[in-house]
Image (spheres, helix red, strand yellow):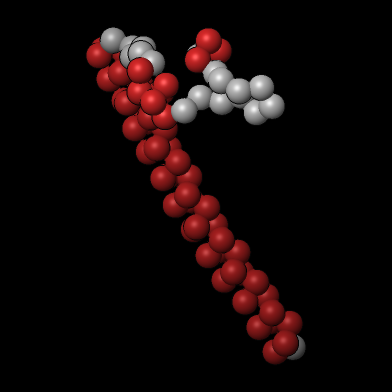
Length: 73
């Protein structure tokens, strides 16, 4: 890519240069392994997000109950 840059003050690569550059891709088996790992990690992210939402709901309920107890006394 360095050989394709042009300019002095602000060197850059134009879109046409990118279109001509080969983009190496991993073998299909490796691509499938990557997708499977990303899917697994996304599952973990979804589970963590769900637990975080539940914890926030519990904290809000606890705060409401505590304030109710304090203000009722």
